[in-house]
Amino acid sequence: MALEVKRKERETNQSLIYRFGKGMQKSGILIRKRAVRFRKSIESPQTEKKAALRREVMKKQYEKIKKMGKPRR
Image (cartoon, rainbow, N blue to C red; front, side, top):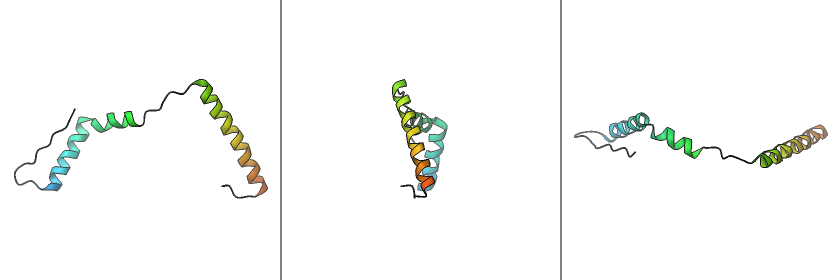
């Protein structure tokens, strides 16, 4: 899974970095790592329900504050 890029003779640092970036894109390593990093954890139905109820309560509070003309914090 490791990507190895060796410097060619008379190659500049910029071209070496460019080749490394292209190699990373072609290998698909970044896509797999991002999928792992941003994976959504599975929540229990009870937790989802509790979060939905909280959103509803907060929405009502914000509407009430807006009607009163006060700035939202």
